Amino acid sequence: MNWDLIFTITNNYALLMWLILAFAPRRTPIMTAIFYGGVGLLAGAYAVIVIPMMTGLIDGGSGGIPDFSTLAGVQQLLSSPGGATIGWIHYLAFDLFVGLWVARNADKYGFARWLQVPILFFVLMLGPLGLVLYLLLRFTRHNKVADAVIPE
Image (cartoon, helix red, strand yellow):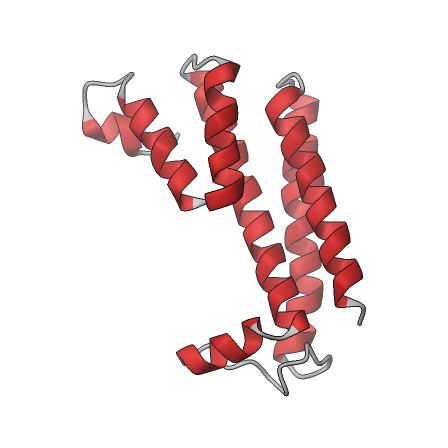
């Protein structure tokens, strides 16, 4: 497989979805398109690659079926072209999902877009750190911890 091509296509596609999320109007058709056409497509691409890789039908360059039960096995997988590519697609899909939730939730609680964009950038680049930043920001609008951190 051409891992560089798969990496480039999925990476650029995810970036396009992030730009739409950050700057396009947050209308239902746009948000639905990001969910199914962005998160869903990336998750589907991941599944189409990882299932055959885990069963040994395709070789990701790690020398066989990945071993997720040991640190050495995960290192071996992620140091291969296929493993790094599926790992990156995994990050892209989940980070976009979290970014979509953050954007919708921030809109619900009335946070201005200029405040959302830097947080979305952190979700894109550093995943969990961006989510923590948003949860801290959201806490400023609530006087109960449970209301601030439970997703709705």
